[in-house]
Length: 320
Image 1 (cartoon, rainbow, N blue to C red):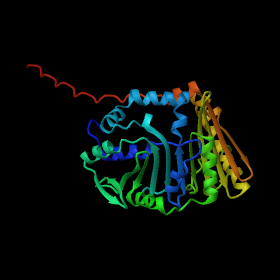
Image 2: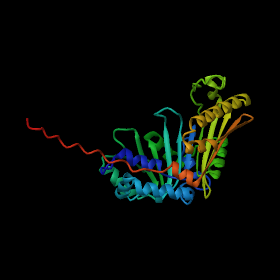
Image 3: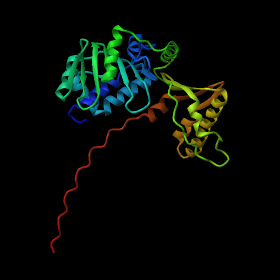
Image 4: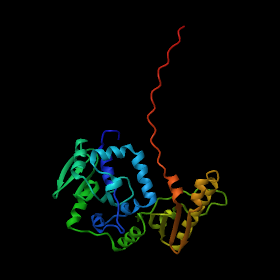
């Protein structure tokens, strides 16, 4: 981004940097399209008070010059001003409708002025100003000083409509979202089956299963919890049958074992894989991992971007 504020970067930060409260904020969920198949959220208020959350914030503040430039231009500090984020999409394809709803404290006038000075355009829809990237079908809007939405313009307008004409998510999906958001600082859920995955052969050790078995997954969900002990990850795959769940579990365990053998010369990777647990129960596959604080910090240590190489000085010709 450099010193010039680019609209895509601005929209991305307004879109992607927001968080949740102990359970996902109902007002944010009410803005989401009712046919969403992928949902995710981050509980920034809760995560950033954990030791690892504070470590990540310190890393970003110290290493990310782009973040510092963004804060200077907009008056908005994601590490301080964000409270909640909910992201939703209707599909997995690149241009599927998507929406981010964010709770925080926004310097709306300064953010909009920075975007417009960088070439953004705006339109007013039902009394709400939508700031848009002129070359891309994306934009953002502030519903008030503490609530922002962003995504493709059609999804942004749909969220504005749902302020006065609610169209809630299915009840079963809402129950799952609430369970995940209460238990985790970051969470995600998808009801889109993954594509076929080719299982690499490994002699007699490779599991003999069809490549399409992963398409038996009806729902995938998981979350990350930050605590004083470190970082805990938990995931769940719901298959159509118990037999398929067992096959999926066997494949995942095979990959874990293979990774452990290949990571023998990397103690950090070996320790990471050793803490990974995969098990099946009925039509569910459970995956879990626990990282101590020190190990999590070493894995997520940010490094400053290297400076651009200076051109070499021209060589002087030797006199003949």
